[in-house]
Length: 369
Image (cartoon, rainbow, N blue to C red; front, side, top):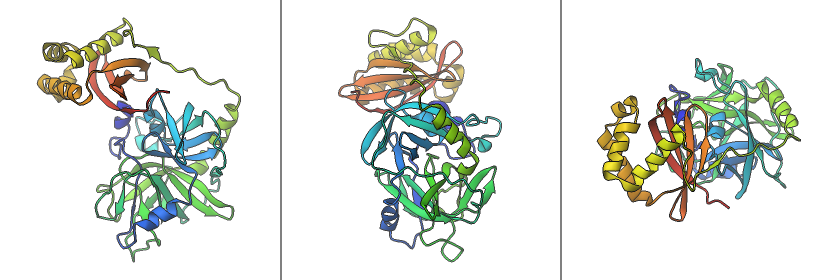
C-alpha cells in the first residue's frame, strides 16, 4: 500500500485494511461463511484485499487496491494458488482530486497465466440495479452488527443486501436493522475500501454489479451504515475494450533498479542510502539523518527524537536490513525491497523537494523465487 493511497479519500474510509463483511446480530456467523463458498470468482488481491475474476487472466478490483499491490511481487490468490500480476490498467477516471467520491476507483489486473477450472463472473450490464437484491462478498475482518470486529482469517464471506439508490454515480447500499426492511442475511462492508464484489442474481447465475469503493459512516458496523460501489454497468465497455486491447500486447518490463551493491547517486538514491545507514548505525547517524534529511512538515508532525526512536525500534524488530531492489513510483514515492534475516519487506518512502523525507512505512513482502 503506497503512502498517498491513504490520502486519496480523506472523508471516506481509506485505511489499508482487508474488505470485511458485517452481518445481522441475530444470525449465526457461520451463515456468512457458508454463503461465501458460492462465490469462487471473488479472489484475494495481495495479502488481504479483494477482487473479482472477470476473465481467465483478468481480475477487476479497486484502483487503490491495484496501487497497493507490491511493486516487486504482486499476487492474486485464487483457491489457495498464487498468480503473478503482470499488468495493471487503471480506469482513466480513477483519480479525481477535486471530487474524490466521484472517482471511478477501478483497475484491471492481468495475471501471468490463466485461471483454469473456475468460471469468471459475468458483468451485470443492465441499468436496473436500484431495488435489486445483491450479494456482498469479500475477504477479511467480520462480525455482527454493533458487536466485536473479528480479525482477518483469510476466508471469503458473503451477506445480502439491496441497492438503495445511485449516489454520485455509484451504487449505494445501507445496513438495515431486522424489522426495518432487512434482507435475510443483511450485511455491509467495513473500513478499508478493498475491491470486494457486489453480485446481482440472474437466470444465468450471479453477475458482478459493483466493486467496493468506500464506506460513509463511523462506526462501520452499525445499523444505518452505507457503502458505495463502482457501478459495473457504467464501465462494462471499458472493461471489455481493455481486455481486448491487451490480449496480444507485450508485457511491460518491471521498472526495478538493483541496489544490492548500492543506491543510485542521484538525490533520491543518496537519501535512501542514508536512511538505511541511519537504521543500521543508529545513534548519532540516525540523529543527523533526522535533522538534515526530514522535511520541515515531517519534523512538525513528529519531533526528531521520536523519529530516531522509531528507527531504533525498527532495527530491534527487523535486525540488519539488506536493500535489494528499488522501484520508483509516482508522486515522489519510492519502494525498496529489503531482506531482513529470512524475511522480506517492502519499504515505501514519500519524498518532497530537496529531496526531503516526508514519511515512510513498510509491510511484509513474499519471499522472491
